[in-house]
Length: 143
View 1 (spheres, rainbow, N blue to C red):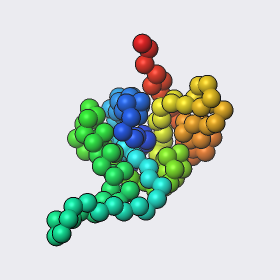
View 2: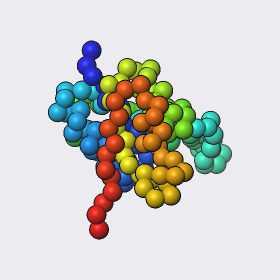
View 3: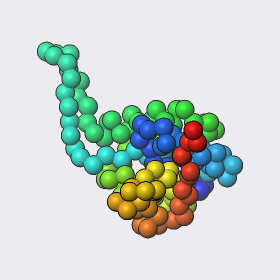
View 4: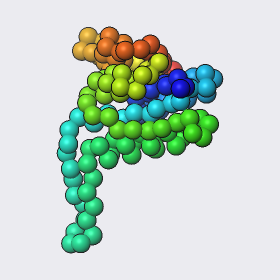
């Protein structure tokens, strides 16, 4: 069984930078990359009118985000998967990593400086609760 690297994403540029770093690591190590987007509620929305209606849930939206990010990554075919995972972003990553025996979780450093550091960040929560190693990517962009 190959190593599993888990990366958490949303639709932000900083999350995409963390995913690119995770993809490079997975490729270099010959590991399988799992791109995860968390969702915390079971909200369902309906769009359209009459018989032309579609239903979209929070889980569908999260999976869509994970899929779109995974499609942009340079990882050998068959070595990348995407999923939606229930929970706050940090808990979704921790639980997914534990359930799937991940060897590494990759997260960005968003909100690890200034007031965000005091209030908490996903990276900080993951680092304290992860069942495996955590790699925190510097996703800040120098101007």
